[in-house]
Length: 79
Image (cartoon, rainbow, N blue to C red; front, side, top):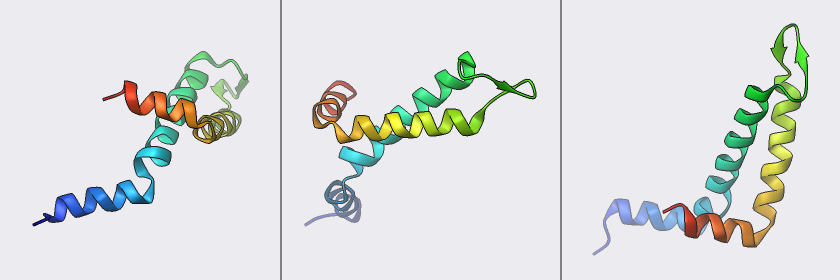
């Protein structure tokens, strides 16, 4: 007999949480943090350009998720 937690995990697995959403969030967060900390894309009123940093991080995260090999490597390496 399946528990509610097991059903929820299966639902998220079928939904693509582990193959799309979590790798996207991981890559987006890491790239955004690096861009914010390094201020490589410039400053605006003595603060990093958040809009530009977030768009670059978003595009890079989408490119990573679109590449199946990178997502597979992330799923194998992280646990």
